[in-house]
Image 1 (cartoon, rainbow, N blue to C red):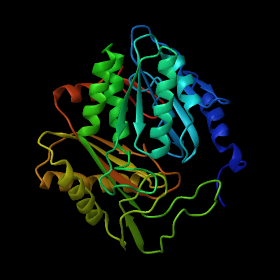
Image 2 (image 1 turned 90 degrees about the vertical axis):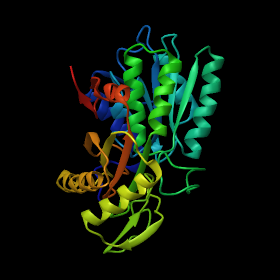
Image 3 (image 1 turned 90 degrees about the horizontal axis):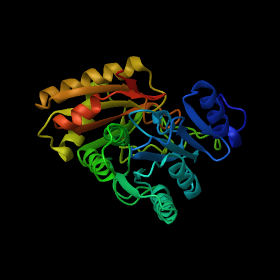
Image 4 (image 1 turned 120 degrees about the vertical axis):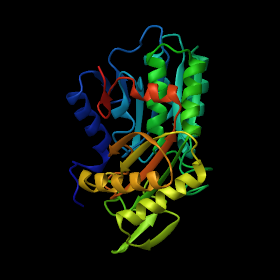
Length: 330
């Protein structure tokens, strides 16, 4: 096993300690596994809380800050955080205006966030929820009932976070998040499997010269295995699958996302092919984001997420954001 770690049992705690040292604008509770904006709670503003298993960085802790999340709850690697984490996070950021939970559609995440919502409401915190289920690759995977939540999580957190930053009420922030999810679709490809610290070996067998189409972000295999394809061929396949389901009638935000081990040289080359296919299909791209944002540890591969937007959504996308993993404006 070649990993830059001490021991598998302390990987998440070690990472949180490192995050705390690098980002004094965050309050990182290593023991209780909660990452919070240091200026929270923000008076008069709705708070956003998300979370999930570690191994997808910068999702979610890297998206805590002005313009996105108020707090994030990291679980163990590929394992949902527990309800106590979410309740603690909600209590830390609630200003009295309510808290929006952003939940990726995985069985453990859904169950634990639902339980946390009940516990938080018992403490007098108003809770709303947005479920992210954008992955068009498979239905009822190893980890979920229905479609998985993947790249659209970034769009939901950014757009809803911008609305909250402007002082929109909870109902409006929830609606913005739901609209972002409904307008988004994703598809992922693996060139190699990932290796978890605990296992130390690939999560599935992918022979040399083959790739996996339609993978999830927890190292689960996809819906089809093929001989290696060129970036041009992969882009045509992935974009067409997304467009077939999304059928956009407005401009789109495009996320060309790396799965953790794919260098930017390759991602930008892949983006060129994605843009070529979209142009050829008559789709206008309003904004593009390229990089490793919703990852799967050391998996080589990529995903494509498209979110069709109106003028208001585009304005929220362009609004300033200052987080460890995403920042522009100001």
